Image (cartoon, rainbow, N blue to C red; front, side, top):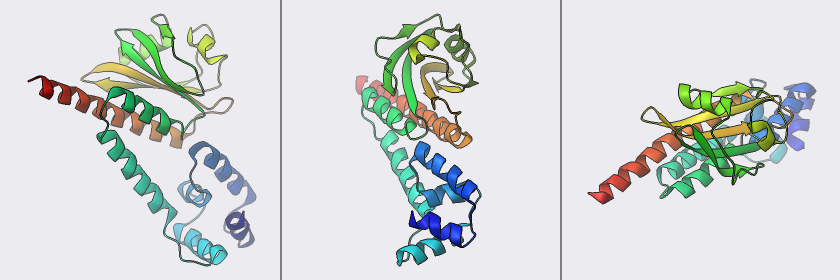
Length: 218
């Protein structure tokens, strides 16, 4: 890893900081330099200088690259043509922030498995999960350890140390739930921020689909 070696030799980061950035890279798929900057371990100008030194060409900021990708994702949400496409897009992007993700449809107080990555949720339906019920009632997200007596434990194949569930709301009503965990590791704060943003995008996209359908019925 030329960049990491360059940064270490110049004393710009420590081995521990590099290790933490590499762990974050596994979760988010972002470049190691971007992670170091976003975690506050490295200045962007030092990163660009190191990239130029080890690669021999002037590089654009990798953070700008991430910003461009985020704009692309927002355009994708705005342009979805159906619910199935939207569900697949949400799961695809959520997987960038967590090892296991799942999307559930909500009808009343029942949650129905829809899409999953790292989890098989098709055919799963519950109206007796206390955790899901509380989230649907309060329209607020959950982050923590799922109670061992909850019905979800069977679906998950055990109790992860930390799970995240975010409701997708339209007009004060929960229409979906996004679940995420990182197996034996906790959900990073940066992952929480990205997943929250994805759910807000999904909420607006679902709303747009409803509006388009009503317009076509006029």
